Image (cartoon, rainbow, N blue to C red; front, side, top):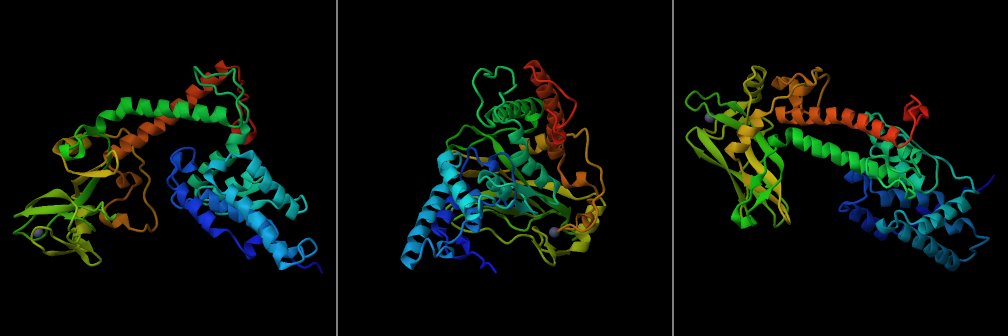
Length: 417
Ligand SMILES: [Zn+2]
C-alpha cells in the first residue's frame, strides 16, 4: 500500500505573512471584489490562495529520497514558504511570473493532474476564484441565490469576454484588450451611467448636509440617516412618542467615540450628538421591553407590538452620518432632512408576505410584507436601480450590435454571445 504523502499545510505555514496580507486586503479600495459587491463573510483572497496551495503541495518530508535529512527538508520548506510569501502579496495578484511558479509546484506534487476544487458553500466566491487563479478547475454552489450570482460574475462570466474590446460609445477599439479588461471597462462605463442617471432621477431625495465650522465648513454627502422607531407611552400622564433604542452609541472606536444624548423636557425630547470624553446613557430597550425616555415607565413588548400592529409605530430622526475628510462625522437631526425623507413615494413595492421565523420576528410588530422592511426612500432607491438595470441592459445590447457583434438569441448561460 502506498503511504499517504504529507501535505505542506499539515506541517507548517508562514502564518505571519498570510495574516498580514489578509488583514491588508480589508483596506484595499481598488480592484478588490469587495469594492464591486458586498458579501458579509468574505474570506480574504490571500488566505484562500495560500491554503489551497499548501493543501496541494507536498511537505518535503514526503520525499525522503530527495530530501533525506531534516536540514534538507527545512531548506526546501523555506523555498516553498518564499513562494507563498510572494504569492499572498496584493501587488502580485496579477503577476504571472509569481503565479506560474505556484502553479508549477502544484503540478509537481500532483503528478501533473491536480484535483478539481469544490466549494459547496461558496458565499462571496473567494475560494473558487483563487482556485481558478492557481490553474485549478473550480466548482462552486450555494443555497443563497445572491452568493451564486456574485460568484458567477466573479468566475464564470469574465472568461467568456477574454480578449474582447469594450463596446460602450467612445471606447478605444483599436487597442488589444488583455484578459477581461474590455469587460471591466464596460462595467465601469455602464455602472457610472446608472449612477449618474439615478442621481438625476432621485438625487433630490438625498440632500447634502452643511458641515459645522469645527469640521471645516462646506457640504458633505450623507452616508446614513439613523432613525429610531417610536410608540406612544401608555402612561396617561405622559403620552410621549417614546423612542425604542437599544443603544445610543454612534461610534465606540477609541479616540472617535460619539453618541446621541437625549435632552428631555416633560414629554418632549430632542437628540444631541456628543463626542470626546464621557459615554452614552443606557438604551431604552432591553430583553424585558422598553422604558419610556420621558417618564421612565417600563413598557412591555405587548404594548409595543399592539401599537405596531395598529399601524401607530412612527420614526424619529436621531442623527446624520457623513464621511468627513479623515473620519466619519455625526451630526444632529435636521428638520429639512426629515421633510425630504417624508417626500419619498415609491411607485412600486415588493408585496410578498413574510414567512417563517426571522431573527427578529417582525410580523409581531405589524410588519407583514417585504415592503414593510424598507423605508419609503429605500423603496424608491431600490426601484430606481432595478429599473436602471433593465435600461442599462438595453443600452449594452444596442451598443454591442453597433460594434459589429451579433445576437444569436442565446444567453451567456446557454453558451450564447
Ligand atoms: Zn412616558
